[in-house]
Image 1 (tube, rainbow, N blue to C red):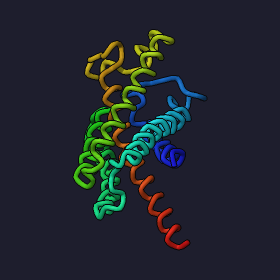
Image 2: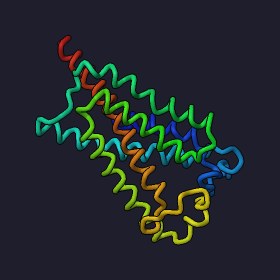
Image 3: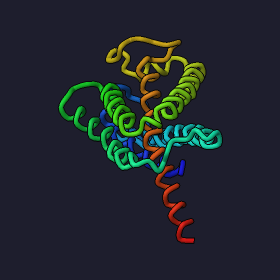
Image 4: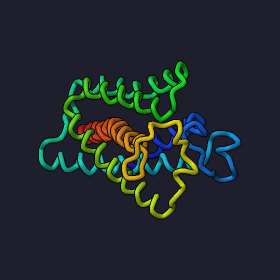
Amino acid sequence: MILRVGAVTALTGLAEPLFIPEYWNPPTLFDLGQRTGFDIESFVFNFSAGFNATAIYAALRTRAQARGTAANQHSSRNRYHRLTLAVFPLVFIGLAVVTNMNAVYVTMFAVSAGFLATCLARPDLIKLIIASGFLFTGLYYAFFLAFNAVYPGYLDQVWNLGALSGVMILGVPLEEVVFALAYGLIVACFAEHFFAWSSVDRDDADDLV
């Protein structure tokens, strides 16, 4: 299931042309990013990020089930949860088309809309999703700090810091921290749907047996 969600999040690499060079302009394999806007690394990164975010959510979900505090996956509200999954991509595409905002801010607004829609449809998931989002943010932030330590100066060379807020948290742009939180939240929203869907399928199979 974690691999499935990772495969879905890998597709968000298709949005990379919106980030290059307005948000950053990293060196890419075969110079694909500079020549086409698309690059292999974005798909690998988004798969890895989605994989890790889902793994965190899965661990929290399993723990909640063991403690008897898991969300009600058979709730009648689940059908509305499926609808909320469309909010994030629709808002992202809409803002990308009608505004000139930096793609990282478009992502933040789109995720906020998707997360709020999920909260309205599934309030039983709020604590679990928020906890998962913050844990992923901590992992991402720790990785960024380590990356800066190993490759000093890379941030200044690659990120378009002049287009951002200028706020740094121990050398990490505020936008990267908020982006990590947004990514962790939206992946958790999608992951719950996949896990719940899988559980329903297993229950139906058990009923047939």
